[in-house]
Image (cartoon, rainbow, N blue to C red):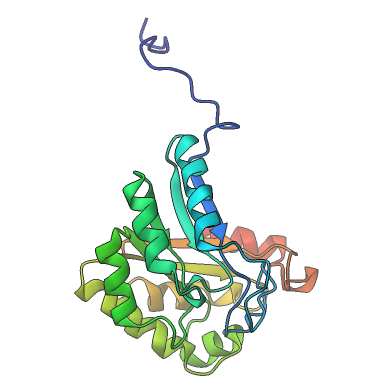
Length: 218
């Protein structure tokens, strides 16, 4: 029968075999984003996992069926062993991706080292339709310009890139302008999220139902 499930492929239990793991390597970050779910801090925490402990976690992830691993934070570029972790994950057969912050710690040279270590994709955030709006959202001047420069650098070295955008009550009405700013960039994916009240984001940051419907209609 056409609708029968093939019997030669085992059923996947997604409670035991995740497709995607987002791993917050550190809470440290130099940005001060208004919506930060991790409530990032300027300095690394003393209780962060060591490199050896991170290796153990990567092995456990491999044993789950080798899902896609996204190293995030905070800012994962705050960890000096970042390239080593990407290299180790790749050697275990994991697909490794990265969402660093657009700060001076993330340089074109670092992206190139990550790509050579096996990194498959890097993602940066664009949350404003223009420089002033984005930098205000991120809490640091120059974030917009640095983000665009890093996306160009990723493109030059052949590293797949994506843009993540968080929709809030403040920027939802400018979604068309956001699209006009993001879509011409040298990226393979634009991932759009809606803010939720966690971390630094409050209920006042959440888009209204009308704003959400309007964005969906775009």
